[in-house]
Amino acid sequence: MTVLETFASLESDTLVRVDDHQLSRFVTVKPAMCGHNARLVGQIGDWTWEAVSHLCGVNAFRATDAQDVPTYLSFFYYQLIGDSAFHLRVPTFGDRLQVVSRCYGFGPESILTIHRLAPASRMLPATVSAEEMLRVRLPGCLYVQTFNRWIQRRGQGNRELQSAAPSGFRYQHLDQLPLELSPRAAYDAARRSGSFVLDDGTLLLRDDLRLTYEVDMGRDLNGVGLLYFASYFEIADSALAKAWRQLGRSDASFLARVVHAQRLLFLANADACTNLTIRIRRFEVPAQPGREVFDIGISERDSGRVLAIVELCCEEKA
Amino acid sequence: MTVLETFASLESDTLVRVDDHQLSRFVTVKPAMCGHNARLVGQIGDWTWEAVSHLCGVNAFRATDAQDVPTYLSFFYYQLIGDSAFHLRVPTFGDRLQVVSRCYGFGPESILTIHRLAPASRMLPATVSAEEMLRVRLPGCLYVQTFNRWIQRRGQGNRELQSAAPSGFRYQHLDQLPLELSPRAAYDAARRSGSFVLDDGTLLLRDDLRLTYEVDMGRDLNGVGLLYFASYFEIADSALAKAWRQLGRSDASFLARVVHAQRLLFLANADACTNLTIRIRRFEVPAQPGREVFDIGISERDSGRVLAIVELCCEEKA
Image (cartoon, rainbow over all chains, first blue to last red; front, side, top):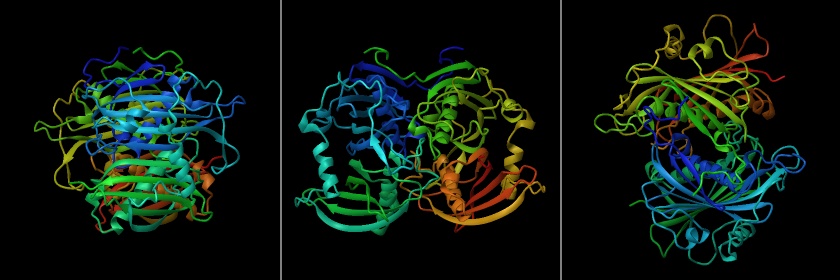
């Protein structure tokens, strides 16, 4: 056996440790990690788990607590910020990306990770920070923040989950996030009000639609039987596609939409075949013509229990 | 920057070239490549493209013809054979797999690839062959055969695709498949009759259901806007889940189903929001109690054009 070289026409994916807080990688975009779906969202989620595995002393893919009960690094808050040049649906087959991932400590039961994705050809700093993502973004980059919490099952099914710190999880060496950059205030407010949209007069409600969905046991559950975090994104996008048609817009304009920012708060999991109600509100931004905000609430139809709150900030394509 | 070591609790994924025909890899199963969905199917598809990229002199992820028009290595026939110990839904978070991938030459416009997946802990040969997959399978392994054809768009939309050989594609050095192991006879017969199921008296038709589906532009299209090959698997599984309920079976028994063999023939692509008719026939196998075969046909509702033919061989879980 030899290391790959003869005939090889594909650059290898590489992964290096920048320092105790950060990983850096070059990667070729493949069909299973891009498209009009949540595959890139899922891939970035794996990069969070990989960063934690390489930086925090615990294999996130098979972590357990002291009693050997599996613990999962569940997604609680997931924020994306790009621009019209580079957003979630820009990367396609064969593109080479550079990705920097940095973990911040958040105590024994949580962790926050920042990723910066950009074309590999760009000359960019070797490091990233929450401050860069939230205050001084570089153009043409897609920034992602994931806030994860360690959980485990408390009973049968997917409705009862509880916090659980895994054995061996090291976070004390990581930087802590300055309070003013923490997502906590934003997600706490969203959890209380049921929406990320602030009632401060900057947005104008234009449409208010309700759709239904049934959790699909043929495609929505992950490898441990939970509703997969990336499926929440697909359920929201699938509902948005239906709303798009109800608003009289073309399929082509849906596929060409530019979502420059998006965030999703995961509040609960659900079992296969659960009936969901999806409320989609569309807001215009009077101060920024051509911009619109979709506020999506996903809840259990029968109990009213809220599963997720989603916000998408879009701009119309020129 | 340093190569990963300190704190790292995760074994690296590795890829080596065995010879001019074969690659071998060790890989950790991650959430984005397993579960009750077609993510592992999609990941294996990427491995086909990677094998071609490393063995055939052309970067399959960004191949073009002599006029620089993109060509895609589309999936035409995809066959999986496992057993109750190791099938598509067995791998889960953190499992380590060993995968061997081998390409066979099929002329300038096609290629056939065999993969063998197994737990990394198994002592297995470094190589694989079509003969091993079809005649002398090792227990506890999942075998996959993909037959791919180079295509490109002929017009607007997804309905008009044509064969197109990419520049630089080397296949002359690859072994050719013995005629008796070629999938051609099977898929030609299925194309003619509309089903893989042979009318030879070995199967007993028990149920015949019809469902509908609309191609979901929020989740079914790939990074170049085509209906993603893995979405065909999810559309079939989603319909199977609905059929399962119509047959009065439990959700738990659906999630626990063992599909020891499956094949899918891709006959056409489709545009976003196309309405589909899905016919599901269930057969019992009198000679093998507990075995059943689902025959699924996916076609355009309005034109009747057949998009795909699927066959799943299942055994009831003890």
